[in-house]
Length: 181
Image 1 (cartoon, rainbow, N blue to C red):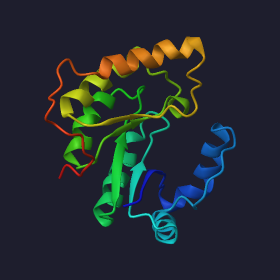
Image 2: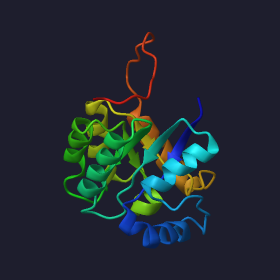
Image 3: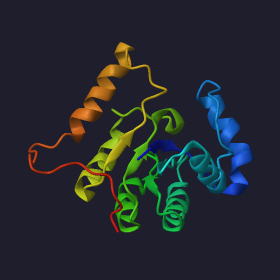
Protein backbone atom coordinates (compact mmCIF):
# COMPACT_ATOMS: atom_id res chain seq x y z
CA UNK A 1 0.00 0.00 0.00
CA UNK A 2 1.33 3.42 -0.97
CA UNK A 3 0.38 6.33 1.31
CA UNK A 4 1.03 10.01 0.57
CA UNK A 5 1.46 11.47 4.04
CA UNK A 6 1.45 15.12 3.06
CA UNK A 7 -1.43 15.99 0.76
CA UNK A 8 -2.68 19.59 0.77
CA UNK A 9 -6.27 20.21 -0.33
CA UNK A 10 -8.10 23.54 -0.35
CA UNK A 11 -11.61 24.61 -1.34
CA UNK A 12 -11.70 25.03 -5.13
CA UNK A 13 -12.37 28.76 -4.89
CA UNK A 14 -9.18 29.34 -2.86
CA UNK A 15 -6.55 27.30 -4.69
CA UNK A 16 -5.56 29.89 -7.32
CA UNK A 17 -4.66 32.35 -4.56
CA UNK A 18 -3.56 29.96 -1.80
CA UNK A 19 -1.04 27.72 -3.55
CA UNK A 20 1.23 30.52 -4.84
CA UNK A 21 1.06 32.31 -1.45
CA UNK A 22 1.98 29.22 0.58
CA UNK A 23 4.66 28.27 -1.94
CA UNK A 24 6.22 31.71 -1.56
CA UNK A 25 6.21 31.46 2.26
CA UNK A 26 7.93 28.08 1.86
CA UNK A 27 10.86 29.59 -0.06
CA UNK A 28 9.09 29.14 -3.42
CA UNK A 29 8.64 25.39 -3.03
CA UNK A 30 6.97 23.78 -6.04
CA UNK A 31 3.54 22.20 -5.89
CA UNK A 32 2.49 19.18 -7.95
CA UNK A 33 -1.30 19.31 -8.04
CA UNK A 34 -3.81 22.10 -8.42
CA UNK A 35 -4.63 21.89 -4.70
CA UNK A 36 -8.23 20.77 -5.22
CA UNK A 37 -9.85 17.60 -3.93
CA UNK A 38 -10.41 16.41 -7.52
CA UNK A 39 -6.81 17.24 -8.41
CA UNK A 40 -5.53 15.22 -5.44
CA UNK A 41 -7.73 12.24 -6.36
CA UNK A 42 -6.52 12.38 -9.99
CA UNK A 43 -2.88 12.58 -8.85
CA UNK A 44 -3.37 9.67 -6.45
CA UNK A 45 -4.75 7.58 -9.30
CA UNK A 46 -1.99 8.57 -11.72
CA UNK A 47 0.79 7.99 -9.16
CA UNK A 48 -0.60 4.72 -7.75
CA UNK A 49 -1.28 6.17 -4.30
CA UNK A 50 -3.77 4.13 -2.25
CA UNK A 51 -4.35 6.54 0.62
CA UNK A 52 -3.59 10.14 1.39
CA UNK A 53 -3.16 11.85 4.72
CA UNK A 54 -4.56 15.33 4.17
CA UNK A 55 -2.97 17.96 6.38
CA UNK A 56 -5.07 21.09 6.68
CA UNK A 57 -3.82 24.31 8.26
CA UNK A 58 -5.32 27.47 9.75
CA UNK A 59 -2.96 30.27 8.77
CA UNK A 60 -4.67 32.97 10.83
CA UNK A 61 -6.96 33.20 13.87
CA UNK A 62 -10.62 32.73 13.03
CA UNK A 63 -10.06 30.16 10.25
CA UNK A 64 -9.95 26.92 12.21
CA UNK A 65 -13.67 26.11 12.32
CA UNK A 66 -14.07 26.63 8.57
CA UNK A 67 -10.91 24.68 7.78
CA UNK A 68 -11.92 21.79 10.05
CA UNK A 69 -15.43 21.67 8.62
CA UNK A 70 -13.91 21.43 5.13
CA UNK A 71 -11.52 18.68 6.33
CA UNK A 72 -14.42 16.65 7.73
CA UNK A 73 -16.36 17.03 4.46
CA UNK A 74 -13.37 15.88 2.38
CA UNK A 75 -12.86 12.86 4.63
CA UNK A 76 -16.56 11.94 4.54
CA UNK A 77 -16.56 11.98 0.72
CA UNK A 78 -13.31 10.05 0.33
CA UNK A 79 -12.70 6.92 2.39
CA UNK A 80 -9.11 6.79 1.09
CA UNK A 81 -8.31 10.23 2.55
CA UNK A 82 -7.46 10.58 6.23
CA UNK A 83 -7.72 14.22 7.25
CA UNK A 84 -6.05 16.08 10.08
CA UNK A 85 -7.69 19.12 11.61
CA UNK A 86 -5.92 22.26 12.74
CA UNK A 87 -6.08 25.12 15.20
CA UNK A 88 -4.37 28.48 15.24
CA UNK A 89 -2.43 29.16 18.47
CA UNK A 90 -3.53 32.80 18.54
CA UNK A 91 -7.24 31.96 18.26
CA UNK A 92 -8.89 32.21 21.70
CA UNK A 93 -10.95 29.08 20.99
CA UNK A 94 -8.02 26.94 19.81
CA UNK A 95 -7.89 24.53 22.78
CA UNK A 96 -11.69 24.09 22.76
CA UNK A 97 -11.61 23.30 19.03
CA UNK A 98 -9.61 20.12 19.70
CA UNK A 99 -12.73 18.40 21.08
CA UNK A 100 -14.57 19.43 17.90
CA UNK A 101 -11.81 17.92 15.77
CA UNK A 102 -12.18 14.64 17.63
CA UNK A 103 -16.00 14.74 17.45
CA UNK A 104 -15.80 15.31 13.67
CA UNK A 105 -13.81 12.08 13.34
CA UNK A 106 -10.68 13.78 12.04
CA UNK A 107 -7.50 11.74 12.46
CA UNK A 108 -5.29 14.20 14.33
CA UNK A 109 -4.10 17.80 14.59
CA UNK A 110 -1.50 19.62 12.48
CA UNK A 111 0.40 22.67 13.68
CA UNK A 112 2.75 24.65 11.43
CA UNK A 113 4.75 27.47 13.05
CA UNK A 114 6.01 29.00 9.80
CA UNK A 115 2.46 29.58 8.57
CA UNK A 116 1.11 30.38 12.04
CA UNK A 117 3.90 32.78 13.14
CA UNK A 118 4.32 31.04 16.49
CA UNK A 119 7.15 28.76 17.71
CA UNK A 120 6.32 25.38 19.29
CA UNK A 121 7.74 26.51 22.63
CA UNK A 122 5.48 29.56 22.74
CA UNK A 123 3.09 29.47 25.70
CA UNK A 124 0.18 29.97 23.27
CA UNK A 125 0.61 26.29 22.32
CA UNK A 126 0.56 24.87 25.87
CA UNK A 127 -3.25 24.68 26.32
CA UNK A 128 -3.47 23.23 22.81
CA UNK A 129 -0.94 20.51 23.64
CA UNK A 130 -2.89 19.66 26.79
CA UNK A 131 -6.18 19.47 24.87
CA UNK A 132 -4.63 17.24 22.20
CA UNK A 133 -3.26 14.89 24.82
CA UNK A 134 -6.61 14.81 26.65
CA UNK A 135 -8.41 14.00 23.37
CA UNK A 136 -5.93 11.23 22.60
CA UNK A 137 -5.29 12.56 19.11
CA UNK A 138 -2.01 12.35 17.20
CA UNK A 139 -0.20 15.65 16.72
CA UNK A 140 1.78 16.46 13.60
CA UNK A 141 4.35 19.20 14.17
CA UNK A 142 5.38 20.50 10.76
CA UNK A 143 9.10 21.24 10.96
CA UNK A 144 10.18 21.61 7.33
CA UNK A 145 10.59 25.39 7.43
CA UNK A 146 12.40 25.42 10.77
CA UNK A 147 16.13 24.90 10.60
CA UNK A 148 16.50 22.67 13.66
CA UNK A 149 20.28 23.03 13.61
CA UNK A 150 19.84 26.66 14.59
CA UNK A 151 20.50 26.67 18.37
CA UNK A 152 17.82 29.24 19.21
CA UNK A 153 15.13 27.03 17.70
CA UNK A 154 16.35 23.60 18.76
CA UNK A 155 15.46 24.26 22.40
CA UNK A 156 11.93 25.34 21.47
CA UNK A 157 11.33 22.20 19.42
CA UNK A 158 12.83 19.94 22.08
CA UNK A 159 10.64 21.53 24.75
CA UNK A 160 7.50 21.08 22.65
CA UNK A 161 8.28 17.41 22.03
CA UNK A 162 9.10 16.92 25.72
CA UNK A 163 5.72 18.42 26.69
CA UNK A 164 3.93 15.91 24.50
CA UNK A 165 5.59 12.75 25.81
CA UNK A 166 3.41 10.58 27.97
CA UNK A 167 4.61 9.77 31.48
CA UNK A 168 3.71 6.12 31.05
CA UNK A 169 3.62 4.10 27.87
CA UNK A 170 1.55 0.98 27.35
CA UNK A 171 3.98 -1.48 25.77
CA UNK A 172 1.14 -3.54 24.30
CA UNK A 173 -0.41 -0.61 22.45
CA UNK A 174 0.62 -0.31 18.82
CA UNK A 175 0.30 3.10 17.15
CA UNK A 176 -2.10 3.16 14.24
CA UNK A 177 -3.54 5.90 12.09
CA UNK A 178 -7.22 5.32 11.56
CA UNK A 179 -10.47 7.18 11.49
CA UNK A 180 -11.92 7.79 14.91
CA UNK A 181 -15.55 7.55 13.85
